[in-house]
Image 1 (cartoon, rainbow, N blue to C red):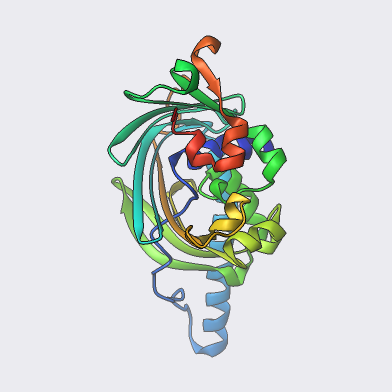
Image 2 (tube, rainbow, N blue to C red):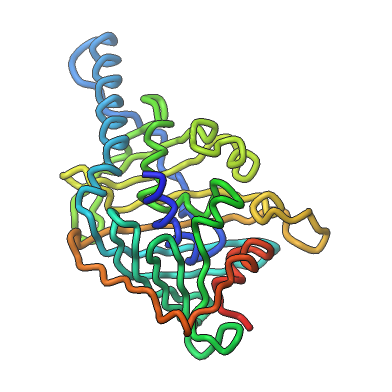
Length: 294
């Protein structure tokens, strides 16, 4: 699962700086009690909570069992009084971690592919260094240099690791909703960041807990995932704090999945058309390397 998460993590990585979403703004509703008396009520509530925990913890594996899916992502990042919004549509191979996607950010369109743990991007009307059409970032190398990165938090494959950090007290069933015409059950989830792979580093970047909301269909698959976090800019970039740079970035991401089993045709661009920007991305922040700027 670690390899899959690293590869598919490119989706959130390329979409913007960070990952997550609207916010856990659902109420603190608890499941309705069943039966009579306080004892049976408590037992029913606990049972419902356990069922919800089981559903959420197994959702990522059940989603991955579909092998492929169409995906949409919407990301909003805010820092220093400025907000950047990006959207993406494409298809994801959850077995191999490969993907194809078109990302639109600040009115610019970026074609994106992830193949064998390599992220490729091409921006319309703009050349990469050396006159190349594409830039690439080696995600395996980036992971080795930086360890677990908050940009991967929006990734459903990587999120499977979160399931191990979820306990009964961390899951609340909010209710039922339709997502793209499909009936779903919505859950609020709190993840203990310390229990995640690379938890110590993540705690420095995003704090002790990670709030999520997930919408599961009647087959227990993920139809929508929302996450919300504030990333400490200096910790996320590995650069020293500066009086002129924002001290934190608020990032919101929503990811939706549909058309399970869809074809994913992800191929690497011709090598002669690609500029390797991995080192530049690691030094200056992934967003710059992925924009194909000359």
